[in-house]
Amino acid sequence: MLRKTIILKAPPEHVWKFLTEKDRLATWFHEGENDLEKDGVYAVVTNTLGKEGTRLCWGRVVEFDPPNTLVHTFTHQWLDGAETVCRWTLTRIDQGTILSLEHSGFENLPDRFEQVANHDVGWDEHFARLRKVVA
Image (cartoon, helix red, strand yellow):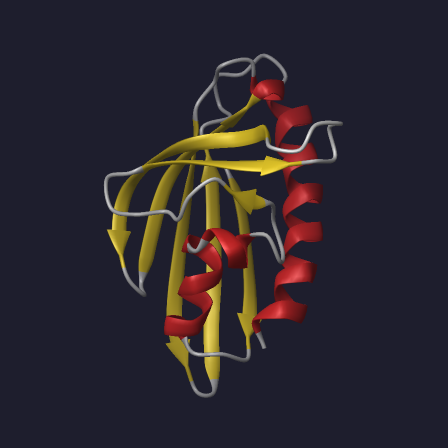
């Protein structure tokens, strides 16, 4: 399991929008095909693979409790069909939010260390951008 935590200078209600609204996802992660909604499916797209609108990662929302908890499955072409799970927890603190991510589901992959290491780097890059745009 991969765990990431950052502190953001914005209330959970504001941070929540950056996790669920397709246009705000585009500012720090990748552009979404649609907003993430309760019991919904989602996909994020990118043009960095050579074609605008190419699906980069996708999944389904399994828990949706604004602005506290978001849980969704997560897969992409480099996971070879394996479905991982992202659990986002937003905790209100004085003048901001503690945002925690638990990304699990790598345990049964033959290249699990490589997958966790690569996702660790990726989430660091995305979180650095999130810090800049959420404030």
